[in-house]
Image 1 (cartoon, rainbow, N blue to C red):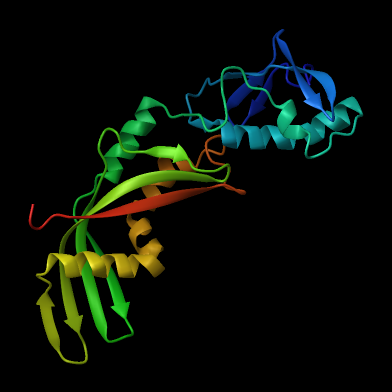
Image 2: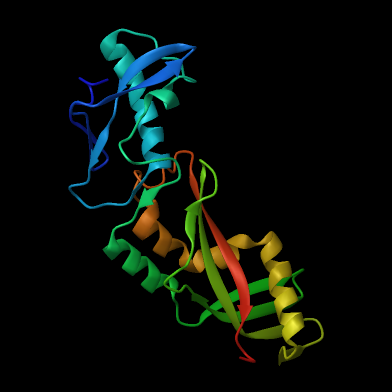
Length: 225
């Protein structure tokens, strides 16, 4: 591993080993493994969870290179990154700034048709503040919490020919939660391109071969504030 990772490019990052080692136990046997360091010449987002999965794939090549068999369950123990641990991630200031800017939207329009008889048009804004939460909730799922503020809801009843704006706050919130329960993608779609452009396109941040972004839309209200 120390020879293979002397300087290895991984999707824009440079993974390298200089001279430090540590010991890990594999099947009750202490094994010396190199401590790998990270260079980020292109200043791109990366995370431990994504990077460790990419390095796990590289261990197949290491096994062939060293003519040894590395079992799949052993691989995670062999990956030791210097001062970088499970769940940690790095997002450049510029990416975070762009992400925050495009996640704070102007008024968007979300349409939902209920049993082909009623069309609901929901107007609202997506809002994140300086402390909005992003974190790995599991090894597969990177979560982003975004607030959706309801401004108004227009109801178009095609059967009874009734058209009106909803006025009751509780009814609006319950309606949005009911729609969202089975149709998360309706509320994710307006911000999806923003997330992919600034985070999801980087395999070093989210390995979309098996990892995904969990967009958690928190419903709030605006009309009576």
